[in-house]
Length: 230
Image (cartoon, rainbow, N blue to C red; front, side, top):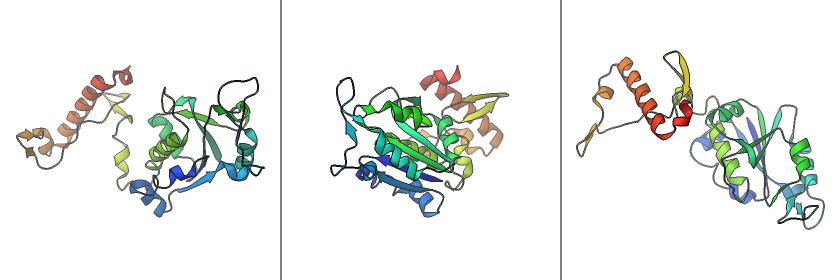
């Protein structure tokens, strides 16, 4: 997969993709991530990317011309262009899975008061939001979304099954597909300060353990995110 990120603040991306799982994915050649300064596609000496909105209003608006030129240079036939914006559809695990199967993504990081609406109407394929709150720009959402999808690319994680039973993944229980939060996890020692690991996890009975995990996942979801069960 190739990911291009268009931003006005490329310095913000210096370290987030240089550690842990994403770094390993890059080193393996499973993902290529390039950060582009949108000002490189401006036409004047001041490298202007924003201007006052027609009709008046507070703040400045990102101009269409630099975005159009950047996308014209970076896009190919398989590219999907994603705008990070509060107006977008809320990002979730299904969105991450869907995006992880694509070969080329371009993330456009919004900034200032907003973008020229013609960008949204004519140049964007999808809009993504992290939730009902406002950030200073789309840089942090771009990092979050990239992290979420890269770990799902085949070959990135050492154990492919790691993504099958994690929070928000769809699983089947009693012939019904539902989304659950992940069940509680424990590791050694089995007894610490008198706090013991559930005996069933030490039993070696995989069927009973799976039933316990499903039951606990259901209980956790019902307590913390009951909306997922509706």
